[in-house]
Figure (cartoon, rainbow, N blue to C red):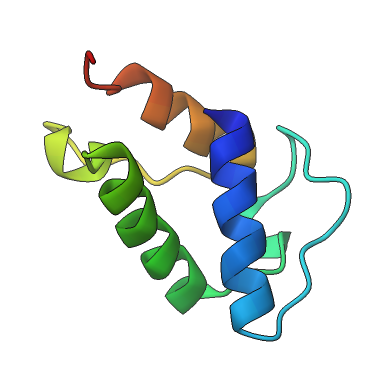
Length: 82
């Protein structure tokens, strides 16, 4: 899951002329990763298309991930069975 998220982040950054920080670690603060808020909206949309779910719509209470590790953990927690 982590690799897929980083892959899509890279694609979005490249398409938007942005540069991601390297390396992207679990401790990387999302707002310091190189993507802006629009980039994260596109990321969630792309991941929903690729994975078939949006964990943020499945949550009972909204959670706003602070780090890349938090973001990945949310996607892993709400992963749909295949």
